[in-house]
Image (cartoon, rainbow, N blue to C red; front, top):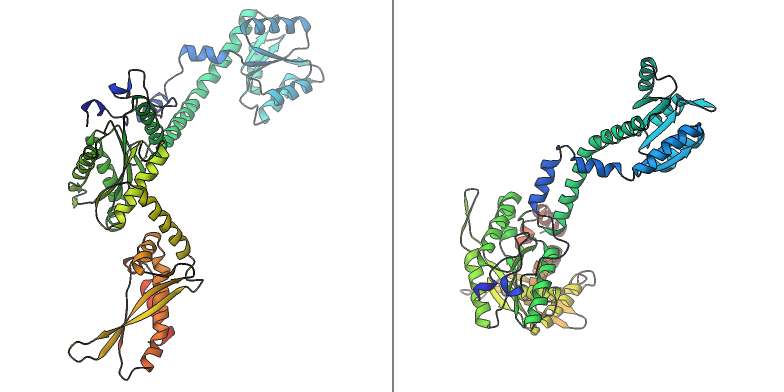
Length: 490
């Protein structure tokens, strides 16, 4: 594989390798790197900058309640020059309706207004949950110290004396807005940090820190688009850690997560263009400019060698095996999803052979996979449709020639396909978890029929029933067996 194609995309902000050109970048909607989340957290308690405060002052809404026309026009002129949006009211009822409809940033109200006073309006404003934090500035003909203290005790933010001075009005508004900005800043920073966290989770795997399927699909599509332009090939690897479930069951979820993290670090050593965690025990890798079958096989073997080296996790030596499916562009697909699907099919084929290793996709696999899907669908309904049967194979004592027992063997008589071999459907049942209800049905049926078998024989024999490891792992397994034995009097 060419050394030029070794630069990786799983590091945020990396350009594509040289062969993709200087302008090639990651997807336009870049995923949020962990550093950005940390930076947002660090900035959460930092005060807002002066430009931030100035931005907050623009396009703010100011509600003015001033019956006096001259004073009102003076205030509106100031607001217009400063770029504020102004709302006008001439009495308390109109002001309250305007405030509830538009939720202004600041209310400027005369203390003396028709039908009521400014204090009553302020009381109603503070009792409204939507308006409780709105800044409120009183205008009064008698702005004595006593009047100012009274205004502040009512909940006002400031009190200005008439005749009004433009500079004082402007300054009072700015002080209120700046105070609001400083109060809101920590909450806005927290919202921003949470937004970054959510955006990161949308593109990155939380356990391994690798790109997830969504980001990987974008990366692969860009790799394929470039490969199409320059007539290069692309190889997709779909890797499964075969022992992850068993390790998690044996040692716990923490050990399983530690293994996934360790595997992800190993995968970064193989210099793939992009790496991701596809989900559960599965990872995806993509390589480019690999035309020769031998090149891809060599890379698959290298991935296996790197990943299957023993791990030391929490004081335990852990050994794993992996199954890798390989699909190539342009032979096996022309978009990322198709290529990923074909590689997954090859990986599953590898697993079904019961051996770790790697397999290259070929169209026959899709046909077989489709057949497996049909069988799996029908198998889920086989019990209720009474299509399953139990056959009994005699067990003979070689020395005496006497029958000493019978072994219960499951058979599936499909209405369209005829008799289906257990070698075909039992592995599918294991994979889908259907082996548990099927195994219980076999045990219950065999025990129920065993009495009739005994009656046909001259001497007692033993009954053997095969059990799945999944059945033995069921918490109620012993209770289930005991209940069946009691029900059938065995």
